[in-house]
Image 1 (spheres, rainbow, N blue to C red):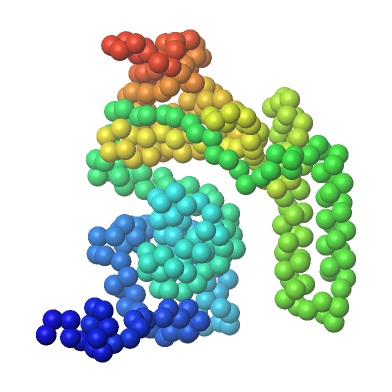
Image 2: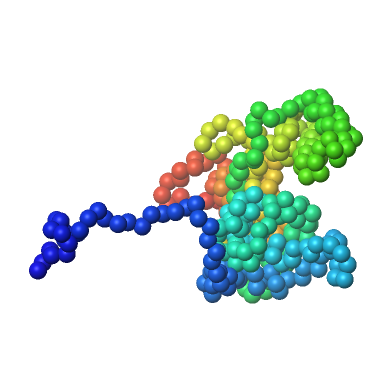
Length: 349
């Protein structure tokens, strides 16, 4: 009969509902087919295949581990380059963030074969091969250009303020940084003088690394003062945590340690053809260098460049005209909100 499923309880149940309890304290062993973690058309696969076709010999020149000799094998440059390229395509630029993603994100697990990789390895690779990575960017653009995906008929140039991993309160004058540097060097000497009994090898190694990194940052900060003096800048303070950063005005108001990242994009397929992080607080001085880099990389200048009012100046108008580049942008001094139907200026050689 309907409802006859127990001892007469309402709804036909014979007692309290039996539910499956979530147990998060257990340890599980699972069989994972790494190849099936991502689809056949996933961008990570395309990046891996693309990087595999490039000349990566420059990345192995500094590898000390060789076949037939003792030593731990080094990470394959194809993996490290692919991780950075895929991460940048996803807007991830932090080595620590990549390390975390390798633990749980399927695309990163596929790239690494589910093997962990430390943030220090990723960061050191990027620093050690900065020039080679830039050359990789050139090779990529050359390949895309050869396939007709980059035309340079119209390039869009713009800048954006990217906040640095530094606090505004961490900026110090030269005399204070010199004092900190003396203290850091003294601390390094004290660590070197310690015996293994006084400090375990692992702890001592971690402390040495932290002290060394702080000393290197302070030395880099002192070098920034030399650059500021050479450029006759009025800036008299430098960050001790990110010496290259500069205090810049933010779009939402106020100021913060930042970089002015310049990006040039080919309008045909929205592909980036130039990117540069600068210390300049304004954009108008960055147009000519960007066009020079594009011309050096792709062996030709853009036919047209479209910019906003931050790039419009008599200097840039003349320079673009001499290079034969059609400069498109708002009239000097014009309001950001133009009347409907109003045309921007265009200067052609």
